[in-house]
View 1: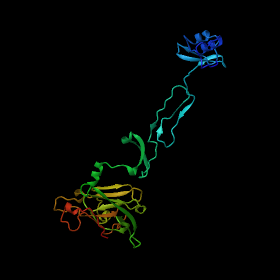
View 2 (view 1 turned 180 degrees about the horizontal axis):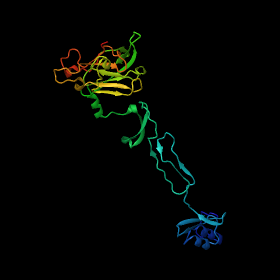
View 3 (view 1 turned 60 degrees about the vertical axis):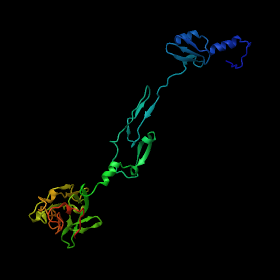
Length: 311
């Protein structure tokens, strides 16, 4: 149809122009069949409405047929996949019809690592309209309750652990292996040192060094333990792993029970000796003093939260 946008009163509408106006109108029919029979001389682009399906049809001169004007789309091929290492699962694939896929976070398939302060994580900032942001572990805040608890930790209110590292080497004679113990600023280790132990502390002897293989560290109230008719002391002693292997340790917690105190003025277990259950002489004359020199019987006042290397 030739478009004329400046019609004026009195202009003549001839048959051709009127027919074009008729063709440009949208007519409503009962159904598609009524459209096809009712409009016998359809022109390309003419539009009609089918009441039964509530669909608009457009006449296509190329195919000489009425086709839907606004057809609904159909899926021809959609895939949602989850990348390896993303922590997501639940991807799906569809080629037709309605499509939905639910993605879930699956952490069970992820590898475990030791976090560092520079590692990042996503958070929802509740003070910023829940905007998704990232922070590092170093930026994590400490709650006031946690900070208060940390500030209140002192010797006597919480059991503290003293780490000690054990190695085995010759004592210099060329014929006798002994235990060397390192702790604090003593990183090289001292040969068979005697230690003053304080109540309220755990002393963790790390025996994972390969030199400890075949030399299980034990405690006894008798010097050289089972090699001198003594027995292993086990009260509040924890053993984990195998000497000489990764993670192995022997730990003793000093409590009134460990010390064997029966009253404020009586001694119980005054000294312990460390020894190797497989070889004699490895602890030498070294002893662990549960009642430091100067104490008169059991007294919490003797627990000053220190240990001394007495050579």
